[in-house]
Structure formats: C-alpha cells, structure tokens
Figure 1 (cartoon, rainbow, N blue to C red):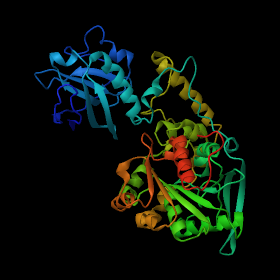
Figure 2 (figure 1 turned 180 degrees about the horizontal axis):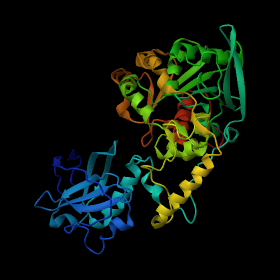
Figure 3 (figure 1 turned 90 degrees about the horizontal axis):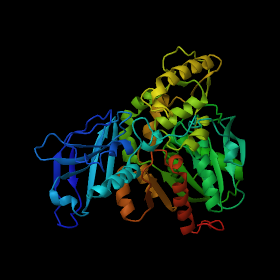
Length: 499
C-alpha cells in the first residue's frame, strides 16, 4: 500500500512525492505508543475522546513519523492511515496545509479517503475527525462510525416495517393479456398531474424501494409517480415468473403503460436502478413507450456490471437464506450495508421477503445477525448478559413465528444476467431522448460511456458516499438531481416554494 502527498506545503512549496510503504494493523483496544506524538497532556486523550481515531508512531523508522489511524477501536476494524508526516521541530510552530490521499483495505472493503489536513497539532484532531466522518464508507458491519454512539437509556434503532401508504397514495393490481392468460402487476402511485415517472427497481428488490424517493420527488416538482413490481418480484403474479429476459420484461413495461393509459399515454420518463435501469434502456430502445420523455439510469454500467457477474453467485450465497422476522431482515439489510438508509430499509425490505414454512434448524437460517455486526447498547460492560437474555427471548419468540425468505431466488436467474447488460452502453447512447446517468462512483464508467459523456450525449452526476442502492441511500440527492434535470429540459416545473 502506497501513500502519496498530493498537495503542496503551503509554506515551503514542497513538490508532491510518495511517502513510505505502510501496513495496516488491527486496532482492538485504544493504546498509546510510548513514542506517540500525542503524548502531551493536551493531545493524550485523543483516542478516548474520539472513538475510531488512534494515534501512534511507526516503529519501522528510526525517525518518528506521525500517524492517525482510522478504525473503530471498540469493534476491531482494520485501521487506515489517514495522515503521515515526518516529525520536524518547525512543523508544529505554525499551521501548514497539505493534502493527502490514502487507500486501504479493511475487512474486505476498499476505503478511499482524501482531504486537506492542517499539520498544527491543535487543529489536526478536529479536522481529521471531520474528514473521517465525511469520507468513510460504512464499516465491515455496515454501520457508520457514528452509529456506535450512545442513544440514551434503553433506546435502540427501530427496525419495524413501515406501510406503503405512508409514501404512496394508491396501490392497485393491473391486469395485462399475455399468451392467452392474464398477468397481474402490482402498482404503487402518487400524484395527479404532470409527467409520469415510471420507476423500475433492481434485481431482488420491489417497487417499495422507491417509497422514500417518491415522497421526496413529489415535494420537489409537479409530477406523477408509478412504481411497479417487475415480473418475479414483489407482489406481481405472472404465469411464467422464471422468464426474466430483457425482451420479456421490456414488453411487460409497454403492456402495463397501455393498460394504465390506453392508446394516448401522458409524457413518461422511465427511471431504473441496476437491473431495472437495464430494462429501462431496453424498453426505450424498443420503443415500447411511444410517449417517452426521457431516461434516467441509476448505477448500472455495462462494463462494471459484466465484470461483476463472475462474483454474483458468491455474493448471493453469502446472504442469509431465511430470517426469523421482517424486523430481522430489515436489521440485516442495514447492518450489512445493503441499504444505508434505515427509513428506506423499513419499507423496502417488506417487498423483498415473504413467509416460508422452513423449520428453524434448516441450513442457512439466520438465527442471529449479531455475528460480526455491532449492536447499539448503552452499557457495554453488560453486553454479554443482555445479549444472552435477548437471544433466549428471541429463540422463544421464533417458535411462535413463521420464518421469512427471499421472494425471488436470484441465483436461478443467472442465464438472463448477460442479456440484461451486454451491449447496454451502446443501447443507452442510441436512445434519442434526453438521458441522465446517476452513479455512486466515477470509476464505474466504461469506455463507451466515457466517450459519450465527453461528447455531451447524456448528463451524468456522481453521488458519493452511497452504496449501490443510490436512490435508497440518498433519496434527497437523487430527487434533487432528477428534478433539476427535468426542469432544465422544461419537462415540468418546481413546486411553489422550491428550491
């Protein structure tokens, strides 16, 4: 692992140069090295006052080097060196500004942090702590570094499910003709006038993944929202739920639009996430929606998606096969980092799991999701006793409840994966309507899209500090980006008083 000084010393104008190689160390308890530069009374309590920051001096060099390691000292997460500088007597006399970038691997997660740090010792603690909070992805357990904070006596996170009616105005089942049979698609909608935003969820998710986003976007612009459960997902019932080919699902979209609006549909902008984004592109390219106004694709790029297919089965196998309750499923989704927004998880996971009759002793049952995940407890010294008591109570309750499992076995859909994403970039660029691409990271762009973006063929926006479920993790940011895009193209207008 190599660290580079990417800025210049404000006082001396030092050129950018690589620092030494360093290795990560596992931080289990707050300790101070005897040569620690924070051993002075003012700075000594750093680790105690700021959980997740530990200062020490490298023993690999004869000359002291100052380091600050990021990582939760309580949970034993691997630390990340955020800052390194040779110790000079003059370097602490006055603030000197330098910028650094560091990349480290911790518990299977790549952490990338950049920031400007002032080397004055009295400013460094505050600024490093702020940089860490602003830049760090979730820890291995899916929790943000701040989630270990005390929540008050007896208070815990609420993982109870939320109703769809809190976010959508209506719910209906739309019937469409399909090969001498009728298929029924579950639809959630809001709004009464303006262009229609047709929302397509990702693989394994449901229309409820758009719940929080729907409430936000309807407060931003004049629009109507229609979110549908795709075939094989959610509460949609079709004759052949195993046919998840891009062609079939794209036709489904056209049939649902026709069933809803007849031969003269209103202006429609299709928004799709992941698999839903791919289906949105196929739908637009095949002209299944003649009144198509625009296209928005969220965090799906052909190159990245195709590369990820080889490891997809391993990821699916790593998920729990069953949950003892919906609350347990919601808790897992948040603490594993699948969904980083608790509110969205509480409504979204309801559409991802269903009751099953599998006995608790079956392989793959998630008896407890606490392994490797940090619980939020008020008194850590009593954690062992409380965990034992809670586990005993949970086991007793489980006997009275049905287990829950995934509504769709994504591992069985593998034969369709390549068809969803192969040729997607060129297909996306070929769509003549205005296009918006929202990504969780700029590194997701492939060659075709990079060239297309430079040529101005579509608008792109990167929303950092989000997971793959961008619209769930940051519904406000996605809504703002989409609202700005639609108003810029004069598709609609902002609501009165916004922005």
